[in-house]
Amino acid sequence: MSAASLLLLLFPLCCLFWNSLAMPQFPEKEKDPSYWTMWAQRTLRGSLELENLNKNVAKNLILFLGDGMGVPTVTAARILKGQLNGESGEESQLEMDKFPYVSLSKTYNTNAQVADSAGTATAYLCGVKANEGTVGVSAAAVRSQCSTTFGNEVTSILKWAKDAGKSVGIVTTTRVNHATPSAAYAHCVDRDWFSDGEMPTEALEAGCKDIALQLFENIPDINVIMGGGRKYMAPRNSSDVEYPEERKHNGTRRDGRNLVEEWRGRMVDRKGRYVWNRRDLLSLNPSSVDYLLGLFEPGDLPYELNRNRETDPSLTEMVDKAIRVLQRNPQGFYLLVEGGRIDHGHHEGKAKQALHEVVEMDRAIEQAGQLTSVHDTLTVVTADHSHVFSFGGYTPRGNSIFGLAPTVSDVDQKPFTSILYGNGPGFKLVNGVRENISTVDYEHNNYQAQSAVPLRMETHGGEDVAVFSRGPMAHLLHGVQEQNYIPHVMAYAACIGQNTHHCQSANDHAPTLAVTPPTLTALLILTGLLC
Image (cartoon, rainbow, N blue to C red; front, side, top):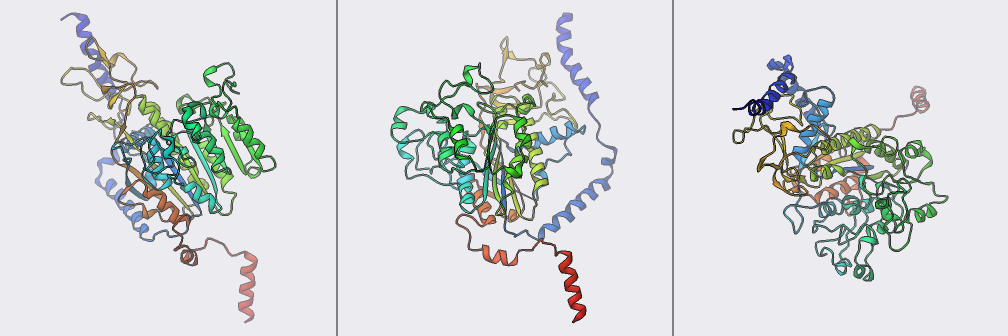
């Protein structure tokens, strides 16, 4: 064997050896059985408190939707969060892990075993299962067939909340007219009809409307809209405010309308503000804003790892501002928050991008919890579908979530990362055999993890996804349920939509958090003494 061949064989083994030496050892206290017993007993005491169910009426409703955030993604993101904090990671907690109730949601579409984001959005927002590729219409509607739209429209919980007098908002890291947010306000048989520029002429002539237009027309007074998608609101070939020299970001509308300017015109004297960069968003005083439109990119927002801290806000910053605007309404609010680029990271085989998106959404969940109360706010965290993402390989405690398995393959004698995809763009052969990843930077932000089957874009997974819930009536999200059950529970908790018969009795018995004013207390004491 030549020296070069020997070096090539030993190099990955050396990498594995040094990686194992660098791995943090598990804490000494974990060797003591009493450590685990005390932890379990502490958890048990907390669980016993859940016997007192929170049956308050939910003043506020928040739905956090991690697009593509299957259970393996949640677990891997938990480990990443811990490792970012200097821990081994496995024992850390995401904010959603702290929610007292967890259930499973069945994600299939009416015509698809493995779902897409449009049909699932119709389920968890409108309360009915639907066909893949369609938003805000029932399963009687057929994708791309305009004529099947009419008479098959279904409304969302966002509209139910608006009709009940609540403020409503949408925050996403994708385009605001992407699949997930569009089901909250649009009725469209094709999720890709972002503007009229993407629609066939026959659909326009038949009376179908693009999703961007429906955003402003169907429910004209949505209080908060934040995300990307500027180019779909602007006339074709008009330059973008942030990228005036890049034609790919030019407007796409064939009708020549500027939907943002039209919105601004309607909001004169209504405390409406439009912002397109982070600086202007953070400078807003929420107490002087009733309507907020923030479009921070021509298309989707960048990944969190790639975000320009000067121009693009984080998801946490958008959620913070949204809640501060919405909670001014004494009747409460409904807020849809989408961590939409989790899905994009997985589709591209870029697990590091996807998992950092989850960690950022978890920060947003924490911030929302600090601004609201479990006594009157039902918060639900879930996903629309999963991905064919996995991690394994008998990795030791504290192994980098993006690192190598501790042994090489016993078939091709090459190392492999713990994270792998069932299919996707990471499939690569070098001289007819699997690539030796010891020669590449597998911890790079844009590294595409190896996959079993070559595809340009990785696919969704078909397994159930988790539903985390806390707040009023959160216990109703239990067991294994159809995905369309979610908005019905949220509406029931808030006494909106069709389930209101229980509301008066609930209000009669709901505990009050009000504190008796000191002056009144003194007066009552004095009255008692005088009597």
